[in-house]
Each structure stands twice: as C-alpha cells, then as structure tokens.
Length: 120
Image 1 (spheres, helix red, strand yellow):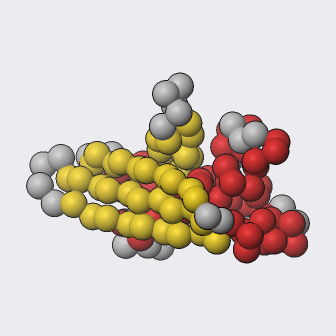
Image 2 (image 1 turned 30 degrees about the vertical axis):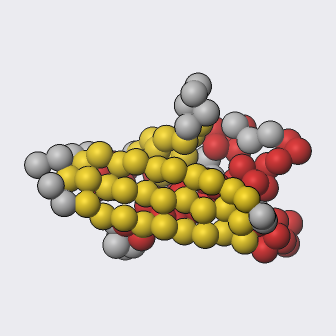
Image 3 (image 1 turned 135 degrees about the vertical axis):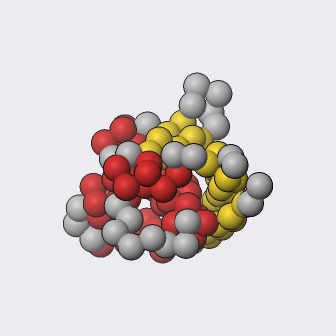
C-alpha cells in the first residue's frame, strides 16, 4: 500500500484580506454547500480550513493539471469532522483510494493535512 501526504498552512488574517479584496473569490474556491455550512461570525475561519484542505489534497495528488476546486467539497459531518466529497476529474483520480483529512486552527493560522492511501 502506498501513501501520499499533503499539508497546507493558511494565515487567517491574509486569507480574510484576500476574501474582502477579491470580488467573487469565495464563489470561485467554494461550493454553495461549503459556504452554507460556515457560521456567519466565523465564515473566514471556516473557509480558510476548507481552502487549506483543498490545497493539501492538491499537494498529495501532485497538483494535477485542470484541478477544479468545485470538484472537491470539504463538508462537515454530523460528528463535526471534515470530509471530502469528490466529483468529475478529481473523483476519477481518487475513486480507488482512501482519502483522509484533518483541519486545525490556532493562533491566527489554519492547517490541514491530507493522507491518500492506495487500496490495492
């Protein structure tokens, strides 16, 4: 069994500035479901975690050409844990793999780690 690992760190203050400065950025990076799951008072923190998870996934996959952020959804399970839902080309890349994600935040930073394990 082989594994790939991806990690990403997001500076929350810089991410908040980018969201405020760039019109439509959240719609380009996130699906409606990802945005809706965020709390209005902590939406930047919520989205920064999703962005870090998507970046970590891209790194674990080796940054495949044509990667679409809308083909990767980072959703919160009832337990509170993050989970990926894939579609399109990304689904084809990971359909025979186990993909795990963890997101944490502290001190103005958000970090995500993704582990992809081959099932064969």
